[in-house]
Length: 474
Image (cartoon, rainbow, N blue to C red):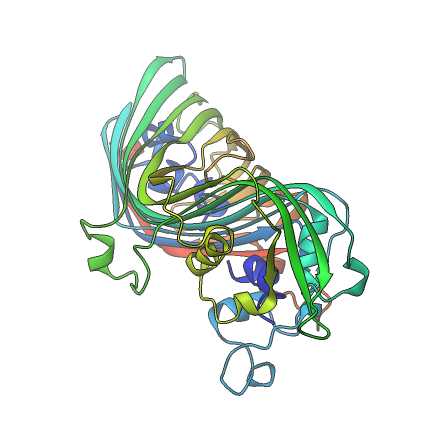
């Protein structure tokens, strides 16, 4: 049933972390404009007089609730290349409940689907100590944060596990947020202090944001139980007895596709502003000496104001609200799910507000970097999500990464190792000339039930970006 697999479908087909990570390119000395998303002060440290980014695209999925163990890879599921033997007669994928296994550690569960395209961008060094850049980016994000293990287990079981019947569960809290938007950023970075091979750089990026789609369910308290369905043998009902929540959604992308005309439409429902701020300290005696670097940045400060419907629920009135598996049959996307929830609780009710805000994935970014003159390097990156768990906002997942690399003008190789969402991941990236290809989670690309690798997500990125002219040749 679609409802019984809704949770698994979210985790394995939903984090577009498109994410700002892409550690192979974002931590490279040859990364150009892609480094600015971690720390805008690095614009002043680019090794080229001009840097052009054609496009770089990234798809990222992670979670700490289920491991993937289908007989086909997660990459095949997302790209639509699943073999015919695992498809129904209508061509849809036959995704069984045992294609995922639960992580039953009792902790709150999180999941992210994040997709990102960094479009045409330009960085120009105005002199040895300063630079400016114009960047463009498109992001699509879906996240579940802070969900209880018991609630997700009930949903995953399809409400049909008799052991779950009649057991009340109280005060469940979680947040679901989606956001799809584009941005144009203007960056300026300069040198604050310079002496004896030491430099302190300051940079800032101001962003104009255009929002296309957002849905949000901030659940502050949910009491429910699973009961047998008296009208349908071998089926069950999720009965909600109390709900303290806020539900918000837009309808702009209903019956629309993301074409250039949609992306540039003046009727898009969201408008906003964002800001990145960063400091970087660099110690390098000369071009033939090792370079040491420490950075501190606060990125994606700001929000998008959407025109849309917002409903506040203080409690369930009169009688319990019931959800059946059949309520979610033939749903397509988070908008229809949001409307089903709204109709169940208050059919015909007018919105409490006709606009709402959704926050950007604000994060504190700390970096340490070493680069030898022969090309070997090492980077340590720490991202800390600074949004509260119950915020009406998408989140940058907190992570710690160590990335050894080898950088030259023609070739770059990196092997990022990450601790993300209480799990370890290992990636790899390669640049040959202007072409980049990489992943922050290699096992997520190849893992399946047949080879015994059971990933909790995937990550892949690639694109075209290159510098023109060397500053050390001036």
